[in-house]
Image (cartoon, rainbow, N blue to C red):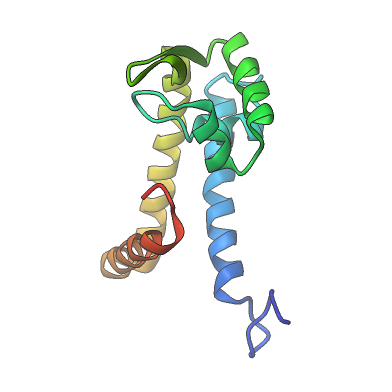
Length: 150
């Protein structure tokens, strides 16, 4: 089974998609650190990126990150202790809690989002506006069959 190359000894599309996503993730994490969040690990940043604007249950964060509920809870505890997230009552279920970004967490997220937007602008300059629109449309179509939260 060939997982890293296509028939012409070039990386296959799966590897290419992974490389592009990793590049965006690395730039976003660097922006988090540059924004002053030097105490946030890449794993914590990845989890923070999954928090919805109105908050997200820890079990949902765990599923999105493909980690155990216990691991997600541990990461949330760390982020809460550092002031990046808070636990708030879930309006849909009084027994449950949602994890929500604090102002500090949103500021860090905004810094990461700005760098990702900058990177996508660079990609558009490299590819051209038409190909970038095609790439976005293709990725949206793929999301329909790859993202259970779409």
